[in-house]
Image (cartoon, rainbow, N blue to C red):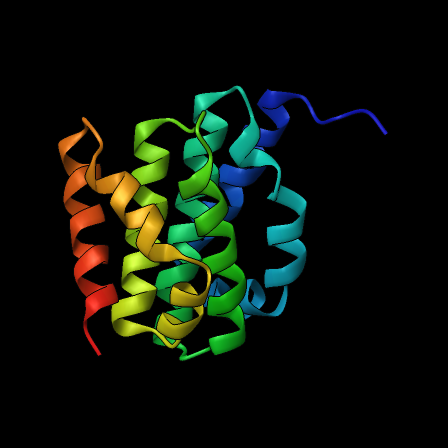
Length: 150
């Protein structure tokens, strides 16, 4: 199968990310979480920065919804995706920032702090803390603080 065109991928990931603006779609988004995340899982490696940003927005939107719903399994899946984005060297700054915010939010308010620690989130936080981009360095420092709290 041919890979999707960046324009088609961008339109589709933005369309799904925009569904989070209306609560009437929440049940559908929750029910189809795995398929949605699987369908867009390669977006963070796209050379198109807008595709990366839209995907990281989708991840952050899912993190917020899954924290609200107290869905540990869903948070674990989204955490894994967010960690992939945060670790990727070629990810644009705003995309990395959104992924780090999702990670920090799920560690602080969610149910996956131990899982994040098991996935060496401390090292990801240290790398982010050393970033030249102030907002990435700040969220990296915040995550590092969370790793030290019981």
